[in-house]
Length: 507
Image (spheres, rainbow, N blue to C red):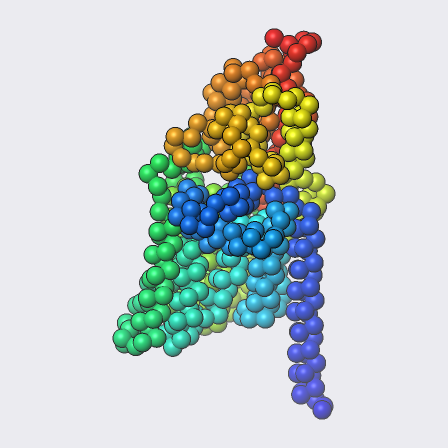
C-alpha cells in the first residue's frame, strides 16, 4: 500500500488517535473534578425530593414546584434505589457528558480542533458535566437530535422520541423541543407523509411526550417560588442580555477572576451579538432559515418574559451548537466561513479558560460547605441537648443531605421530615429570605443559627462579627466555600452562630 492510499490510511489513524486521546483527556478531567466536587443546594434539593417521595408524588407534585418536568427527578429516583450515594451524584452528569463528548468527537461536522475545543467550553467542561443537574441531558440529547435532523422526514420516529425527551428536561429545553416538533409536523405535511403510519406514530410520540412535560411542569397555584424571586427580578431586556452573555461571551477578559462590569461586559455582548450575526449569515445560506433563526430568537425572548437563571444560558449555548451542527455545510461565502470559524474558536478558547479556572478551584477548595457544616451541626446538637438551632437561607439546607433528619427548629417546628425545601405559599421558612426575616429570626432568640452568607443582609455581611455581636450572638464556626460561575468565584460559605452567654456580646 503506497502513495495516496497509505497517506489516507495514516491520516485516518491519526484522527482516530486524536479523537481517542481527546475523549480520554475529557473523561479524566470531568472525573477528576467530579471526585472533588461538593454538591450544592440545587443538587441536594433534587436528591432529597427523589429520596424521600414515591415516584408518583415526586413527579405528580413536587417536581412541579421546582418549575421543571420530572425527567431528572425520575432518574435520581431510580439511581438512589439502585444504591448510588449522594456523594456520587456527579457520576450521573459526568457519565452523560462523556457519552456526549464521544458523539461530538465522532459525529460533529466541524474540523477536529473545533470539536475538541467544544468539549473545553464552560457547559461541557464544568457546569453541566460536573455539577449534577438535569441540564446534563441537554449535552447528550441535543447533539443526538442534530444527527437525526437531516433525516427527520424519512425516519421521523427516532427523531420524535429524542425531541420528546428533550422537552422533559427543563422549561427552556421544552421551548427548544417545541420548535423542533412544530417543524417536524410542517415538514411531514409538506412531504405529504403525515398520513403515513410512521409519521403518525412520530407525531403522536412527540406530542405525547410534550404533553407529559407540560403536565408534570404545570405550575401549581400555590407555588411561592416566584414570589420569593420577585424582589430579585430585573427588567426583561436586562434578563435577556444576561441570558445571551451566559451562553456565549460573558466578558472580554475571560481570564479575569473578578466579576466583570462596565465596558468589559459591553464588549462581551458585542462579541456575542457578532457571533450570532455570523451564525445568522450561515443559516440564511441554507433551506431551514425560519426554524434556525427562530430557535435562538424565541429562547432569548422567552428568557426575558420568564425569569431566566444563569443556568439556562447553557440551553441557548447548546441550541446554537445545534444550529451550527445542522447548517455547517451551507454554501456560505468563504470570508463569512472563515470569520465564523475564528469566532467559534475564540468562544471555545475564552470559555476553556473559564472552565480551567473553575475546575481547578473546585479541586482545591470547597464548592459547598454542606457536609462539614452538617457534621458541626450534629456535634453542636449532641453537646446542647434540647437547645434550639435555626437555619437561614436556602444554602443552609446543603446540610440536609448529610443529616439523618431535619434538626432546624424554624423549619416545621423541628419535625424530622421533610428535609427538602417546600416552595408552597403557606411555607413560613423561605429558601430566598428577606432581610426582615433575618431580624425576625434573631428576635426569637434561638440558641444557634446556621446561616448562608449569600442571604445574610448586606449591612450585616459588611460587619458580620460586629453586627451579630450587637444582636447577642458570636461566630462559632465558619465553613468556607465558593461556587464558580464562568471562572469567577462567589461566596457560598456557611456560618454557625451561637447565642452569647457571656462577654461583650451577651444580652
